[in-house]
Amino acid sequence: MVKAGLEDIVAAESSICDVDGTAGRLIYRGYDIHDLAENSTFEEVIYLLWFGQLPTKSELDKLTKDLNSNRALPKPVIDALHNYPKKALPMEVLRTAVSMLSMYDPDGDDNSIPASTRKATRLMAQFPTIVAYWDCIRNGRDLKAPKEDLTIAANFLYMLKGETPDEVSTKSLDIALILHADHELNASTFAGRVAAATLTDMYSAVVAAIGTLKGPLHGGANQEVIKMLIEINDPEKAKAYVEKKLAEHQKMMGFGHRVYKTEDPRAHHLRIMSEELGKRLKDERWYKMSREIEEVVFKQKGLYANVDFYSASVYYMLGIPIDLFTPIFAISRMSGWAAHILEQLSNNRLIRPRADYTGARNLKYAAITSR
Ligand code: CMC
Image (tube, rainbow, N blue to C red; front, top):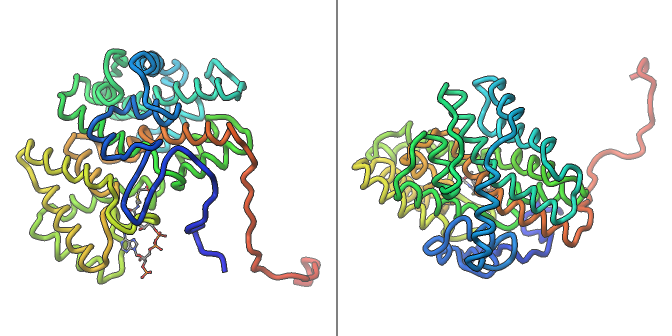
């Protein structure tokens, strides 16, 4: 009997990321996620994921310069963004714009590892621009040229809101980006690796990954969480709301995980941020509701909050529009996707599993008139 969903199947060897679901540990290239969340920056983590070690100062300066100088989008891509229907979902826009960008990449159809690394750098730089520009375009705001002296987190908030963000907002987003950067063979990364293994190009593999992340069982869950919190709107009503949902056998978005059987270590940092941002805004509703929900879901179902649960209230309190939550996940995960695609290319074999056939056999073709 095949276990549905490839559960527990080891499908690749990888030195990028380890998820220990029993101990609740997450490691990027040997470094514990808690250490990285508390001490590093997203740019350092990108270097770590792509090149296997933490950068020296000059290595980090070089990568930062490459990332910061590649943020602008080609004019035809900006023109296309202006022509998309205003109701287009940001994840649809990201998927489509990334696909279009491949036709303007200076490395063209060179899919060697050095060229693919350059393509990944451009994509990493341009993802935030696409997301921020789309929000400006659909709301009729002017587009801000990216600022090269700002970090990825600060520049994204700047392009989105039109003003340089404060330190707390920048730091919160930076930590969220670190926490979402990679997660072993999650569904979107696996999709990216499957595509890459056919020796297609970096853009095609990333488009496959974006489309996969969009689903509500994966990156789309954070948007569903905030919709639920808005619907509840009062910590006093949270318990009854959850009890009703569970009694109706409905899924609680932001809970459960295929690998973690204990607390998702990423949720720990996001929970702290959610509490701190609430205090800062003098509106602890979102955090308090989240805590209530967490308690009831654990008591009744034994399920822990995953990364999407507290990231929802964090992004909401940072003033980020709800349908940009999953694109922000994509901005961060672009770093992990690229690391995995490059790793796949460095030791490639086509990924082609088998299916256990359960259909009919030995049927005889009958002419349509006699069926
Ligand atoms: N709410 C209620 N029940 C749940 C939930 C949940 N969120 N998650 C799992 N269960 C129950 C499920 O009903 C099933 O119970 P039973 O055996 O009685 O039918 C049991 O737990 C196993 O669930 P499953 O859906 O077979 O587990 P899975 O490993 O296939 O799914 C999951 C993992 C993350 C898709 C699932 O937990 C889920 O749908 N969670 C909600 C969506 C979500 O938050 N997704 C984000 C995942 S973390 C970030 C990411 O990777 O993108």
